[in-house]
Image 1 (tube, rainbow, N blue to C red):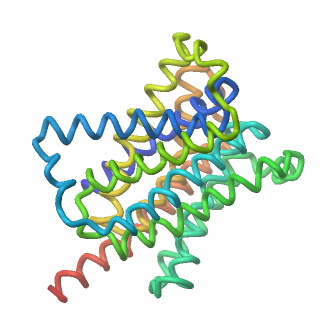
Image 2: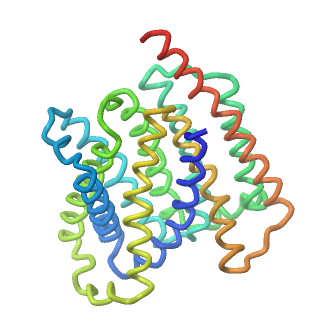
Length: 301
């Protein structure tokens, strides 16, 4: 039940992130988005560690090489690619393409990490993806009408998510979730700053960050969409599985749809309702591997 609560909570948070990125990227550029969201997210988690008296966890012997690699693959590259993509495609299409993450996670897990593919898991992934197609009214021409220079970076991002999630589950299962999230975001912030500086992004428009809408978006994207979100994401990977955690990308278009209906009075159509049902069914069917994995772990322990 805690895993499903984390899944829904994360989908609600990330459902708004694509709108925040769309608003911020014209101001600070793609790599500026990476820097600021990672910086604010890492700061929030650092405060959490200090308040909880867990800062000493950083002084313990940690697999720094693996942690830095996950920071690059799970924050720096994918978040930069997402910001780049949203310069050319809509935030709704970006959120929909983000739903390919479970497919990459499953396939890359089988190829590189020896993951066992359950029939029910594959069925859930397929049903969930069909639900995503319904959410875009089965209008596949939308994908071909959009700028491929925006679509390709988004797919690179989802592939990075899939690989990094499997790598985290295999290599970093003993690292505390808050430490894992802090180091990941710190690596993303450092890398984002370097690339932002080299690209000349963000500096000339720094005063625009003080605008109310931009500040709200930075807080939502950084503290919520990066800091708290990664605590939930890594928790689901460690307590469940990489496949289960990445199912959140199926729910993100759903929550984005809900946010749009609540705050923007956007209409929810019948195909969208069918899509919602398919997505929820896919998530339920795909949750089985996490349970099987936990049972296997208990037996081996």
